Picture 1 (cartoon, rainbow, N blue to C red):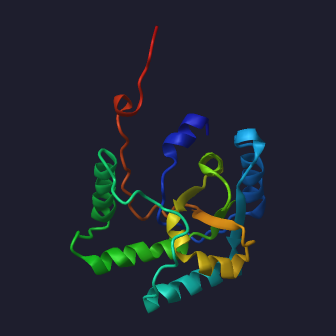
Picture 2: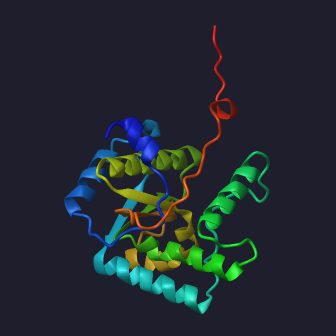
Length: 221
């Protein structure tokens, strides 16, 4: 698979089979991802990979919280601005319509929407999950470095025939994740990432992208 195919075939998959992933494949992906760029080579990412019984326990504890209606943990970072201006508001709305429309869930069916959201904390059935942390005292450029690292991981997973889904939703249950992983206090959970083989029996909506002239300006001599 060449780079262009990896980029265009990568998407947020929200239904996985339980087919296990060989450890050597994950090690190969993460070893190569270490070459992701970062300012002054800080490499500010801290990744934890869960499979097997530890992941099952995390899913169980998270599922119990969902079933009990536990409130989310306090936010440790702002996921989105309080008010999204145009065109970002429209893009987010379009995502919601397409996501829930593919599941045949109406805007008014709040319970069905909650059930769909709860699948986040089962990792959509994936047999592996990566949790990415960053030091609390890092600045926005280092958060950008973490984003480049995660993108590199996702593209390498595609090269291995795997799919993924990054999930900021896990930051809402960061205390439960910490119960399993015991990260140092100086780290903050940025996101989780479900990893596995796509369940092709489940239909997925492929979201579009803004046209080139919306996001790129060529300044030519």
